[in-house]
Length: 155
Image 1 (cartoon, helix red, strand yellow):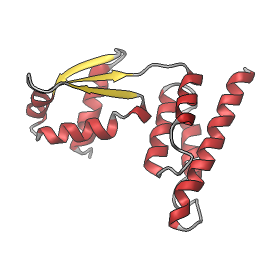
Image 2 (spheres, rainbow, N blue to C red):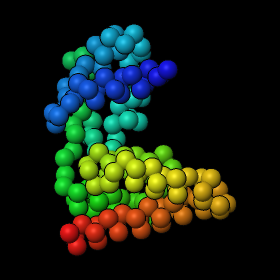
Image 3 (tube, rainbow, N blue to C red):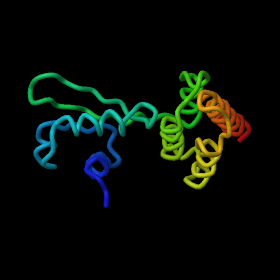
Image 4 (spheres, one colour):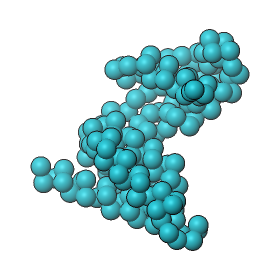
């Protein structure tokens, strides 16, 4: 059974559809799902992140309206943006999975390719001290993304 965060995320994604933006009222959405507005904030801040290709614009007052903006970029722009983000220092598994999801959503990699990459960057796959895992994961992810960029240039 899906939890409330999954249900809210699915609702927002379905409502957004093929549109670039979605304007919603945090309070109305909270009333609709019979949850606290902080639950809506949680979903927006964890599921609609720049790593996943979204920007959230919040307007104070006036009922707490929020605009969800889907950032549309070409494949190479997406890859270059990810490479320019601070992943070199280390990256958590969750953030890496979000980046892979964004690459999948952008059509740069398939869902199968994302699952294969994810399997190679899990904590269990990275046999290293806990401190070193994020750095190792970042190196692997950066190497894969660089290869994607190279393959895109060759095409």
